[in-house]
Amino acid sequence: MRHLRLVGRAGSVRIDLATSEDPVVREETRTELIDALGRLSVDDRTIIALRWFEEMSEADMAEVLDVRPGTVKSRLHRAMARLRAELGGGTHE
Image (tube, rainbow, N blue to C red; front, side, top):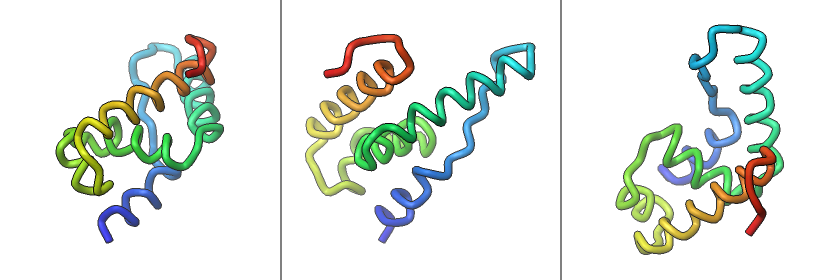
């Protein structure tokens, strides 16, 4: 049940990018990130959301997703590579 709640929230996560002084730049960056996340698969969005928005450990993520910790690590690595590629900062694996 927890998995379903977290997966449902993965698509509606609020991202706060307060690193920029310029609110216009901050909003553009936020929009680019949200758009890039939206182009990823549900599985990729879920694993990214669990790690970066829910701030879960790999062990907790493994429990929620019912997979081994090593599987979490590899899925997260691949999802982040795809996100970087969507943002224009790397190659797509």
